[in-house]
Length: 357
Image (cartoon, rainbow, N blue to C red; front, top):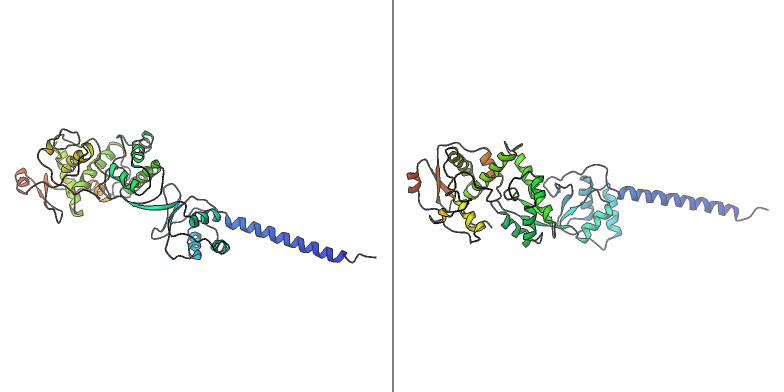
């Protein structure tokens, strides 16, 4: 006589086997959708999601943005495989929400790892703006005030021989090669990485300028030094290339550059004094190699970080026979350009560019 439990047990076995297959398939799908895509990421138009020089992803989560919207952006940027799996994770963990702000994502990474960063606020980035014309010292102070890294540590990194060698910089520091821009850095960021990010930006931006690609060695050094002087001298953009031409005219005939900006650098960076509102004759007589009133030719190194406009002005200077210029309208930032010293003297008193923020 057949057991009455034989048929139900067989059915139960089939059912259990079917459930195990479903569970295995579901587990495999979770592993698949949770894993990163096998393709490189794409940047988002507008800069809210972009690829950093080190390969990480910088993403800005907008105020009021939904979980599905974040997942859609991540999927379109090829950072995650599937937006709906992202939404499922958000529903399962609905007690925690993605935080508003800017974040750095180390990729490739699983969806779970990416979500953890965004909901816990880890790797949240600070937006730091470094204006054109700042010295390394002032740049370091801005980074310290933003909580990115200590100023002293940043300056040590900017003088690290290994970093200098990486970028083939012949000078004693990265002064002039840290591009002025808006950066997104995490708090307590390694100073060396901050220096490298700014230097990478410099060389990338330089290569994008007309005539900037392939500038190396002594040519690069001279370009950056003269651009840093132009950066601290010009006030209105349409005069930058003309100023560059004036300085090149002086260099061409062996005349001293006589840049007030270099005197200001000596006063503030070498002597450690407050930024002067005027340059006096006694200041132009200071015996320092950076003083281009006393020493002809270019100073030993850059006096600040030049921006794209100053770099392009030196790469493409405006030709003229001018040898002098003088600020005559501090309000408008206009200069008077002249061919002779007599005309230059008649133009008025000396001014220097205001202290950068």
